[in-house]
Image (cartoon, rainbow, N blue to C red):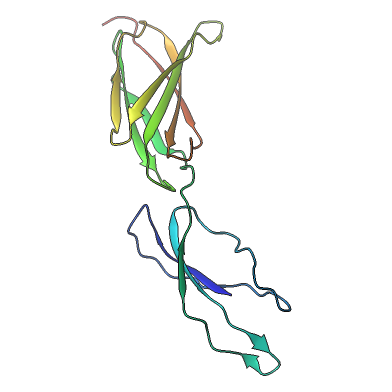
Amino acid sequence: VYYWKVQSLSRRSKRHVEKKILTFRGNKTFGMLPGLEPYSSYKLNVRVVNGKGEGPASPDKVFKTPEGVPSSPSFLKITNPTLDSLTLEWGSPTHPNGVLTSYILKFQPINNTHELGPLVEIRIPANESSLILKNLNYSTRYKFYFNAQTSVGSGSQITEEAVTIMDE
């Protein structure tokens, strides 16, 4: 079985096509293809091999892999601290592995003895790339947990900490 990735369905990037070959012994009529990437288009063909060598290829068969969960957002940057607000900026995942549906931001205050306060969760539309968090406590450290989602589920999260300023 010869198979190769034609394209990612998330991006229209062209890249070097690397054909992979998987050999099955005997008269098997099915098998598993390892190492496929989510939300991608592939082609494959099958060839029979005997003592005389490799026969002609079957017609190419096109198939698509289903969506997966995204990789973590490429970055999370926290800027513009004021008494009661912080600005968050982020980059989309390097490998969306599907159609992004939203981002999930969770955050909580950290007190002077490093105890964590109540966790707040916010769902952010997938087309956003920044958010101003308002009504925070002044001179307080916050811990942020941030990840992206597809219809399949949440990807891995990145974390960051930031502090609102003491006085303006």
